[in-house]
Image (cartoon, rainbow, N blue to C red; front, side, top):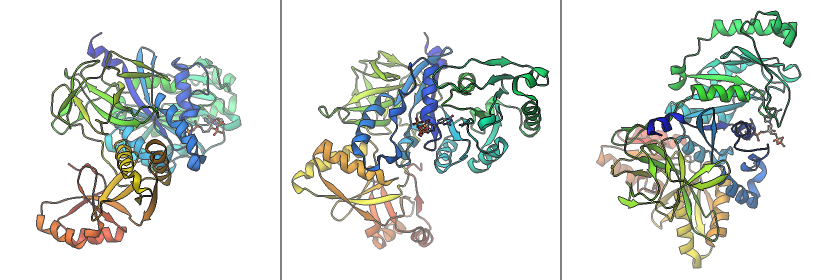
Length: 527
Ligand code: G4P
């Protein structure tokens, strides 16, 4: 098959949600439809439960499982679907943001009773930044929730995106009768069913026909007609281009656990979602159809097997064709590498592949050469953009508790940072290591992994920093003044960039005022 056909077949996306909205359940149902798993319950273990904060064995177990299911590929309706898993726990949000650089579109799951939640907002911000097309699935319609119109308003006002319902619920909770598919003009009647795939679709081209009243009852039928009329009056007709440019999010309703509304979602998804898209580099934009191979690493997993020190780097292919045992250029190191055992991820199995195409994610065994954000190319010297570090929220200084094991600690912390578990800022004098994270759980994971994987013991001392800001300027003299005045609040990030550790937002504002030629950035990518 030609490259173009392979590219057009692929749909690479992520499912995101605030924890508990139903991401895992929906993923599982999609895999059931795709025939990638045979029974419900297979993906469930993939998530780190909220209660796991101190339960490290659980985290370790989860980590092992989550690698196999980090990418789930299956065929559906002539398409090759690649679902990239994103951790739901907020303390691993950074990992989720990075994974979102590797997808071409997103399905956002919302709990119909809770509406837009904290994580929903942050995840949508990341999607908006990249103009990632989003489909919204409003879940748990078998339970009493907010009024659907109210939900749509809430989505628009708090997520700053236009919405367009492509399905509409008939009732909700105990009165939930089914979903009217606006896109296909048919009705799917609700029959709670957790394991089987329900096929109760009744085609109804005219919603004014008496058949609707017979199917769902007079009152719900009248309500549905009225609501559909309102929708057509209020919302513009669905325009795929507006969805693809990230301006409008189509909305579906259903109940993932009951397998309801999921097929409508999947069928529409394969029709409207984008095939693999190009990516920007520091030199030019690279399109999937470009002949030469290129890709970038967005995730690294170390020490999967405690007996081996191997790591797996997850590479998203952007252009050309990747082939096994072929030399490619590792741009940052300017060195050639070939890969004897690249793996693909078909649901829970890993298998060695000979070739892969744009949109695919493959696993490369690595002995420590890759960092997150690295580019592989067929000789060209560009680096993919769009994998920034965000300012952490919590800062703690890492202290070595066993001087005999400093080497192990150095190696361990540096590898964990390559993996993107957290960010490290080095402060002088004394090479002090300030670790920045999004949540407390990350510190616990670091301490546990340093101990269990590297035999190093550490403790963390909280630091009162508010934000880490990367600094740029054209005014050397002002920068030198600033560095003299604030030396105790300065540090270097992993690439040696200067960072200001501001203790409060007030002090940051003061710095901006006192040093007007310095620019303070809260993400590391500002070129
Ligand atoms: P997450 O990955 O987004 O964190 O959510 P997950 O799928 O684990 O779902 C969270 C809870 O919501 C689960 O219940 C799940 O069964 C339930 N759920 C998912 N979809 C629906 C739905 O359509 N309707 C209803 N009523 N519930 C739904 P749990 O009690 O945490 O787990 P479990 O013991 O039921 O598996």
